[in-house]
Length: 291
Image 1: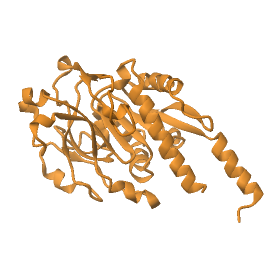
Image 2: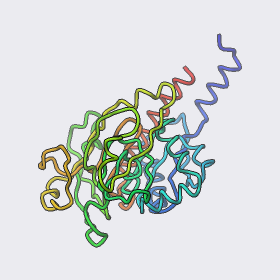
Image 3: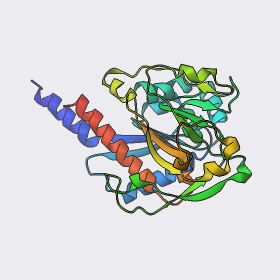
Image 4: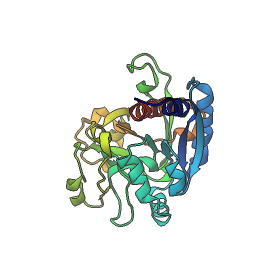
């Protein structure tokens, strides 16, 4: 039986612990994410029982404090190299793939969170992994070919994904796309290794009860219709009908990725949605630890 003191400690833990959300601040648009997180926190009724803290993350010690993490847009190779030199790459893999903490990557962050990335020089890019997808880096071309597009994002609507949702202004800057949904397997996506200019993420085994998350399929959260037909020279085999469009947002278990840059807009709706995801996952973990 739980003692009165232990019961009180658990109650105090549940009532006072902050949910700490980190933004990887090695390079790229980390400050913009922090601004939208603050706006999202004010706009959504998060709840009264927990506090929230949003922090920049540059070290393994700072990452250790976090319950959730955003990997922002920027230059994926640079972020990977700086993370490796800062002894942060392995802690990031542990955070995403072993401890299975909620993680969101935008643009470069999506590349880093993929299990496979092509158009990449071997040895020039290391991946974190977590999403069973192959991404095509710089799919839409050079920075001068950046563009904006109105996106249909049904997940921002009702819980069942139905109902009218105001379009989201997607900003694409040297953006990747999800070129292929890979089979859900334990271990490395070894078959991807044989593809030219393609790198894969190393395998990591999730801890304890997190094993079930590894077997969850990738959910396609958003597509950009039509552009693939005008960019045939950039398109590899996707295994999907061309009319399906380009996959620009995916989710698998604890990991979420977007090709575009929500942080470069004034629209906090995706940040609001993701914070709710973080809250739900954090509360589920708390209940399992303190039933």
